[in-house]
Length: 389
Image (cartoon, rainbow, N blue to C red; front, side, top):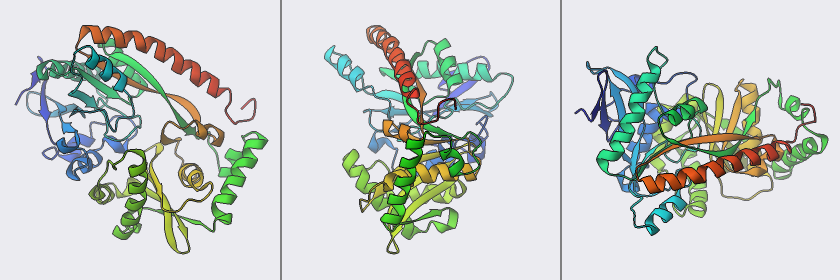
């Protein structure tokens, strides 16, 4: 079925990734591999019942093809009737449009469900006509918006080059903030600590000592076959406890973790904290070609500084020892600044069909982008590194 077309390409809209060959999908990535937009990760979300129509994530993936059916590009996309699990907040936009008599939902969301990590959204390989293919996908998304009579389309956590490109296609541009740890070719954790101001360095060493020695805790780093179903059961208990407190209901099903472990075993890392020969806390991480992505944390016992150790310091240690350029430890968290994570800008692009709502949002975003830049600059001045570094 041809859902949109041009002289060169045609676009199909897929409700499921089940019929797509994983190799065909994965070869669309250009640059370092991001695990979250692999077929294995996205299909695990779908097959496990985590991101499906019943949870408000109906697949509307745009697949760009040649006239012979060769896959040339893709844009992961979902039809949504809420704004949960996105981490780029538009509830205010929805409320304003509702008060004005409009229907904000459903909307289209181009993202990785429940994953606030920057990565490619326009899945187009490096080629001479890459921008032309991206343009076909960007315009195809706009046409899909109009055809489905939805209020808007949102492309979130985009790399800067895609964000700049979207701006040329009349998408509204939005920014936000996260905290990432950047690897300056450190040889060891102590090498990293030596770049910090004395007080910050002493505080991190104290936190690590408290988390491990004073709590009687050891750390296991598990990958591949080391992550048994029993370990996943334990981690899921941690995740469920956190999810119930943060969201009221966890986003991911138990089956998701088994599926993603089977399909992405070499890119899945569990950092587990053990006390009295029992796991009491843990965090799941995903390994990209140049980045360690910290995702979900949970615990069944509260211990001082253990969250910092498992989620931040162990991640830094792993990145240094494996030559990864950065650690992304999830959304928000200015407390990460004191632990060597620095403010960075995240980006999203938005297509809004109603002229009045579009104008109001565009005006708001001008002020919001300015405030994000100002806040990043202020926080950057308070980074824990020695002056001159």
